[in-house]
Image (cartoon, rainbow, N blue to C red):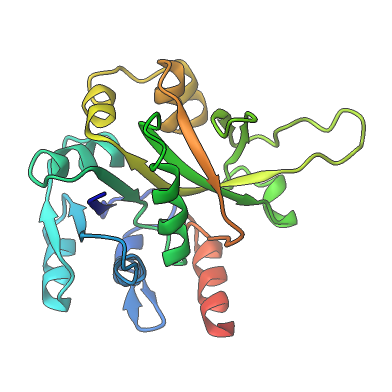
Length: 239
């Protein structure tokens, strides 16, 4: 199974301006993510997909493979789709450019999900830490017995009605797609659920496209705010 990882990277960011180029232990965020993904031996290639000449130049100067993509894209998935029209693969992995703690084990779990021929879209989850259960920046997911995602939300799901403390799972920002799923995604309009939660994966679920989820014990921290950035810096320091 030939797999290519694509890291969508925009320079514009409302909550943390220019976050892709913010330094973490001497390297820009995008470089931390690229090198973490590149450490997986299961990938045929890793490509940063950006609409920023500045990010492109930083990547090329550091030896990180990068390609320019359209500035008209509304989501990272659309950016991955553009790359899929140039680069042939069986599976395209989308690693969010703000996930510097991604590990080879995440990639392995994700590709394991895609070994199921029924899986058009895959992703990963991990048991939610206490700090993330009520945190709207940490997306929660609930799945069926067959591993298919039932729903993703920034809310705390499932609801603890009886005080019996259900298991909470945090969704991590990694996806795997087959080309047919990417081709269909870009033709679909934003769904009402996607607009409400600001979660593009809900476009798949709203249109009857299943997302299969693999479980990993390894957590990650997406960098959306200054607090997230400092949390990642501290975690890397303790490693």
